Image 1 (tube, rainbow, N blue to C red):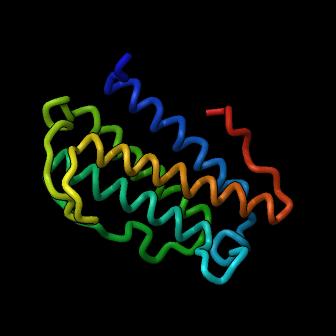
Image 2 (cartoon, helix red, strand yellow):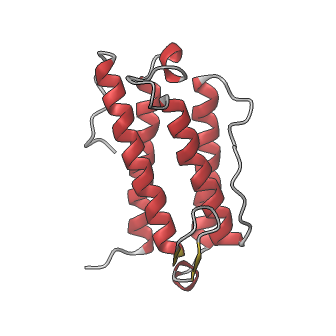
Length: 154
C-alpha cells in the first residue's frame, strides 16, 4: 500500500509533536550547551538544523524560493526555540496543503546538499534527519538522568 500525501503529512506531524516534547524535556541550562562528547553538538544546534531544513525545503518545493537561512537567529531561550519551531510548522502546514503530487514528483538537483532527487525524497530526507537528531536528543536526556518522552505518544 502506498501512503497518501495526507498520511505522510500526519506522520510528519506526529514526529514533530514528539520532537517538541523532547525539547520541552531538556532543562534550559542544558539545551544550549550539553554534549556527551566534544565532537557532538548541543541539542539546540540539532533543532536549528531540523527546522532550518524544513523551512528551506518547504519554501523551495512549494514556492520555488530556495534559501537556507537560520530562522533562529538571535534566539537564546528554549521557549523561543519552541515558538519558532511552531511558527515554521504553521507555515509548513499551509505550504504542504497547496502542493500537489505533480509538484512533489519534480526531480532536480538539491540546492542545499547537492544530489538530484524528487521533492518528495527531499521531504523524506528532512523527516529522517529529524528522527535521527531526535534520537540523539533522547540519548542526551538519558545521559542527563531524564526520561525522554514516550516514543509511542505522537
